[in-house]
Length: 116
Image 1: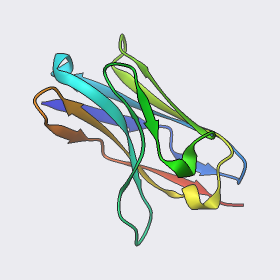
Image 2: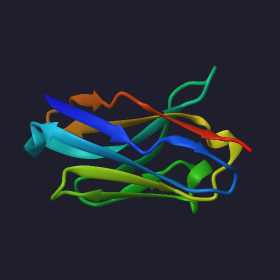
Image 3: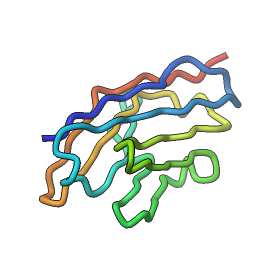
């Protein structure tokens, strides 16, 4: 079992920045990938960014050049630096981790609202 605790969401004006954090505990040695999904009202959950154990990273086209995912393995924490935020980035952001055995674990979600 892996437990995930997120922090860093909030209200920000368009063009602003936020940094999300997600700390993992439990069966840390089994963690493979970590990353972020988001879900806006009335929309399906979508992958925002992922960071594999190998260090490779992927981003949704809509956030490329604006968001950066990073991972501190010593702290078992993954971060999402979000810059140049837009109204369409408003969503609940969920941290996830995938294990070497193929299990997926989710954080509780943190609200990000971009509005003037």
